[in-house]
Length: 377
Ligand code: SF4
Image 1: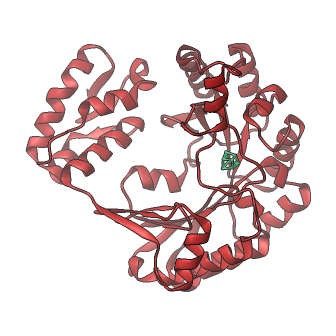
Image 2: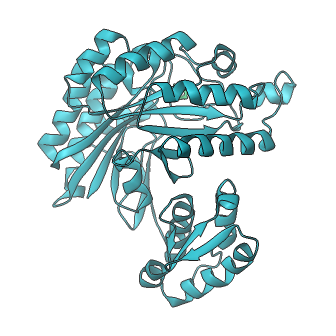
């Protein structure tokens, strides 16, 4: 079981908070798509005898590709890899690209899951973040998309400066009206070198408020759980049967190939990063060179990654798996380190799995780093 991630590095405009890799010039789109096709062909031997269960178009803004381009890429996957008979094929899409005609067109393509970057239904939030869509487009695209797609995820951002808890609750309530089966929600963070960081530094915008983000996280969790969603990962809520297969595989340490500039890959032992530059990527691929840097993970790296992802999920960290994959020393170390957090009611052990309590959930990344092993053994 494996996944293919395809990075589409173009956006109409730069959202103020974003530090992903993208270009706002679409001049090289054709060349880039050809390079993506070629990279898929060049790497086909990495998945010999491994079945591809998920294909994920992320970005950037994959909905900037035409349907023909998307189908061309999907067909290339089918021609070069062994694909499950019912794969999850996700397209990240922005509301301003999802006209009724486009949604209809997509519903007839192999894409069977939409992940829509709504972020907020409020004009003030969308302007602050410099999103390319407005509140009306966010609502309109959802009312049409839900008629043609059953498997839809939306992204929402909390902890936005100036957005009260009451406004955040309204955001969640509006989202719930559309009956989407999956919601991903993230706290707004001020990443270095973004426009948001510059505004905060100049005092034009306040810094994000961790306390407000923490409150809004709990408002979200309570509201969505009461509406039948399972909080299966720190930032992800899904109805039964609608958890993201792509992300779940990633959290469970399954292999994936990342195609396109800045895309990451993982084969169980090594992690790879493609070059974060569209021109360099296109030029290298044209010479049949994979523009990838590879790092072999040590046992400690793999243990730390498992702790980080495991604690964020409903499945927690399995003590048996830690012992089997990394050795008894790691299991003993983990139990010893977890003790303090168990006493503080931030972690608990249930059926040989360490999980975060409700109180510890928002802090899970910080707790995980305390359970990391630092020495290279
Ligand atoms: S659309 Fe997505 S990838 Fe593009 S700038 Fe905005 S947040 Fe970043």
